[in-house]
Image (cartoon, rainbow, N blue to C red):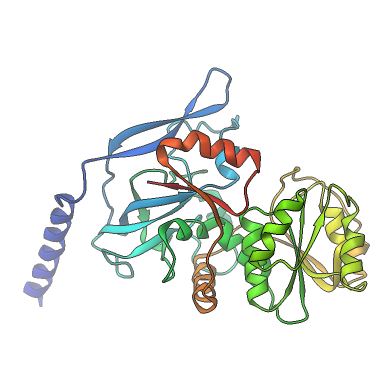
Length: 365
């Protein structure tokens, strides 16, 4: 028995050495990291460093694509309590597993995987421990590099039929859109879902809701964007520039009933209208704060309708797997507005900041 154990351990050690010496894996990797600027804000630089070593419960991923999120802009704002100079940016990667640690069991070399935003949230509600450790590219090193090391529990397989670029959109925007719609309640024929805007989270929410059989209403400041999103499950559009009190239009479109689920990404300037739009027994999924994280509404607006407000902050790995199963069953494809090479990272950030896109912006490495 001891001999067998010794042989087994020797095999693992040899395998680890073989991985480290794999000629297919280069010694260095490009990566984008933060650096302090004279203004006090952070900037970024494309640099090169050694390919990181793989720990016992970790995997090495050759990154093929990275999707951008709003957080990729917010990370440049300084935090007086933390210096994150040198942090590797980005949270949403897709690529190939090229090496695994000796204790890894659920992931194998050659798998096509995506990262998870939270590397240590397996299932159930979030915990203080999950939040304290934080997300990729925010509190811990992210994924904008040719090669990154991730925890075994921090990767999931890419659904069959999706490209790397499509897979990269799933970890944050995809899972947030799923949890905001199907993650906390069932949806089906006769239900109404309202999504705000035409960004990644909102379009994922629209696709998930439509695939479940619900009717989808979208708001936007652009009639052109509202026309585009009809290709992705949206049936009715409301221009909130020309119709600022858009809750009245939602009630009109639904014969006074309102929406069963409202995906609120606006925050301060949209929350009150969202609550006015919700149906009896409905849910306002509070996702973000594009206009700020403040805002107020009358509690009686929810109490009188037996409705609820549900905070959404991405989701657990188990939720990710359930979402991927739904995507595979429904044969859904994420909406990718444009794909840019890593060398055009600055242009990608500018396009993110402009808001002039529908769906997701993705970097190809």
